[in-house]
Image (tube, rainbow, N blue to C red; front, side, top):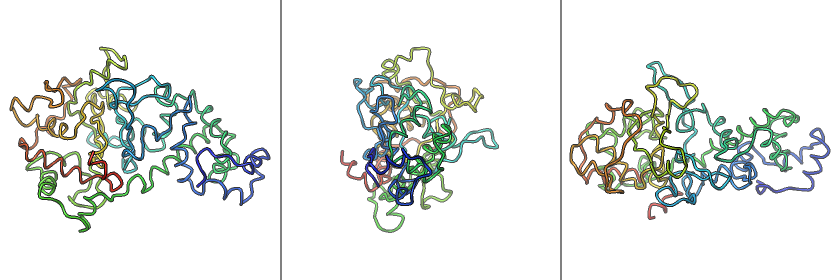
Length: 391
């Protein structure tokens, strides 16, 4: 694959001559597949207003395809939410991992009235193609003014022009919408490759008999998949049989788990006291007020190395997340205290839509079982990130 952003004199000449002058050799000189083209686009900062931000900026491959950057604000805001291309905008939500995103089903309403699938934490884009087109046009993210400006940036790169015409159509750039769609299709094609979903964690190797679990990890595995002891797999199990291959550890449904408001983020982004994150209700296809405050169940793949946690990045430590869930199953005073702040957990925004039945299923966990669950969750880390567990 050619280096990102590289120009060649031959390609530039072909662009000047027009699409019908492209030879087979010239086409071969461009990105050889849609996936390779999509990977180049994924890393291209020129697709943002100030040429400082790419998809990979907030979904960095070396950080589990999440955003590892401090955003310029003081802790605890620093990594909770991402910084926009303008160098000052921050939103209200934590950047979810792009790993394993290809397994989220197309957003739709199920027969029982609940919702499932889609991309973004509220499912507002039905598939990866739709998601790929969102950040470039979001004023708080990559900040481009419209599709035409994005397409013009694409045409600045002669290798892109050759590749798009080769993989899609000679006259692709005559239609802005078609060219923009080709860009989103290319990025989505890259995101569907095994590079983002290798299924090579210690858990996967354990299933193949290639790795052994410690006693603590094995206890955590048993607890995780047993509804008698925890409620974890009620939401974080896709396959019907525990231990099935290619488990993504999400059922892609939507729930309100009572995540506290991240007051520090709200103060930093200036959203004001009257703002509330509607979650699923913010999705244009959803109008039922009973969906307010619900967010898509995330995959637990790479969860140990992709903090901070929850839709608003309010928790720093994975053990804190497990303790937060445990609070619903015990009246112990100590369980009602956030160990990171040594204060009560904080208020949620939509108490009337809490998934109470799910949250209160199962008994309380003692420290040994909390630690065992955390140990098991660490085994879900892709091989390329296992060194990060030491950090």
